[in-house]
Length: 382
Image 1 (cartoon, rainbow, N blue to C red):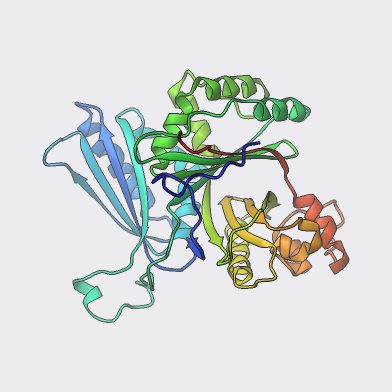
Image 2 (image 1 turned 180 degrees about the horizontal axis):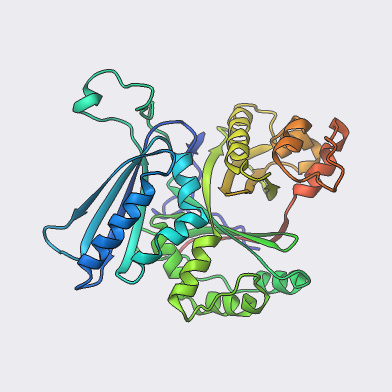
């Protein structure tokens, strides 16, 4: 495992700013921008597919409006913007199986897409010229980031293949970290929990460019092909549609990140897996986010950095801690109340349905803890 720190003088180095906080849970309105590159001659087909999709999206809870624009310079370039009451309902929809089915008609006429999501901070004109109503909330103030984009993938392997998969994932050769002049791979952390794999990556620059860069590397492709026979969900990396569907379902977006305003020191990386009860994944992620924000202001907290990933009923919390997790299981879990664990997760479910007691927190921590397979930081450029 490489733990080399990047140089301060390198513009692409991955340094953590103090008291970084990024979140989808501030309640402000969301603007989604989708850049679409349509195949030549398929513009009418794309428009018809969009109109069908638009009618379906109109009934999705949290959706406010959308707009379709075509470039005046290049008819193959289109722009779709949509407004949502807040980020959580959009994320619940875009990460759902319903969305996978909805966008299928677009695949045959679209060459490439790029999705960008923004909280609305200021606006002028119309209703915005007066007092902003409760239904049109704006982000109250700019957030301070650290220039790092965090993303994860998760998938399951066939029961009984866990050891073989762990060995394959641990032994791969790291790809070239520099993608281009503005994008660099910072860190990759791989964990397993039973037969579930979680790969968390940190990128400075363009996430999409980094993901495409990684996918083209021979050493990465060899690993992906090696684990293919062990996957529960079939995929064919030589079939673009098969690969696209697999990685769409595997995407595990970061919904919250906080880095404590403390001097950097030697830390350990851990991950906890919280299998949420049906329909409670976003609620669980939001509760963890609230408690991580509070912990970031507590100098006694062992958690110096926390990222929460959520998709449907899968919630993963990636943490950098200054000591082991066992010293304070309640703080490590991020859910100090055992009743909340019982209410929101299935960690305790063994057919008894009984709520855990305080003495069970150490046991719950053991149940949630993921096994570290590999954790690699990029070495600095020569």
